[in-house]
Length: 252
Image (cartoon, rainbow, N blue to C red; front, top):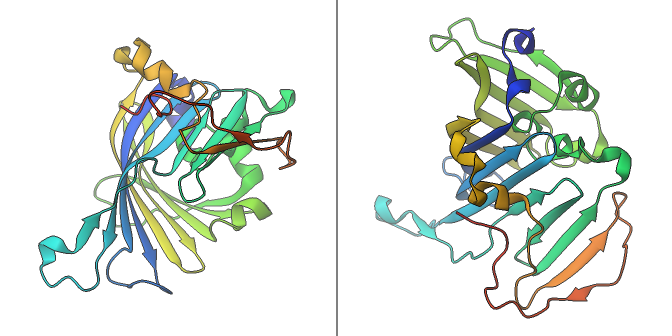
């Protein structure tokens, strides 16, 4: 019923910033997030998307000065996921591997809904219902007039990442946007805050925004793995070719 009252399907391009707090109750603290990430999300209908972590701050448990509680990590390629409509690309800085997952023909134009944050990438209600059990959990005391949804994964691949999602949404100019999301897992939870929603912004027509979704280059010193949608290796690992810039797609 929420989707019927607001028109998220009318979004052609979209951008927002996010702050992500990662709570790890096993190897971290219950009071403070183990890491705090700052990043960017971009989307172009129907099947192009990007999620990129730009800055990472790590908790320093030994710090006595509250202002030095977190130290900035030297991360050149943070968590980075991009879909160009034909393939999904994922950067793994720890292993220095760029994985390209080729999409079968029947999934092109819709695989973006299988991304890390389907609530932000225009997933249709029917698609969401096949992935999650969803119920509205909006509290009675809700002065901001936001909607709260609880989503429990049905599929094994989603359940491997989280046990439950709580998504907080707010209507702005007849559009429905997530303002926060909490993903519970076996070790704690991950809290997202979404800011600066920019749907159908005219500046998205300029080249910089569209370059976000082109095939990224393999950074110097990395290897590239190409696989199909089922995880089967499509070819052997490819050594990265020299790249004078050593950069993936536009990171502005």
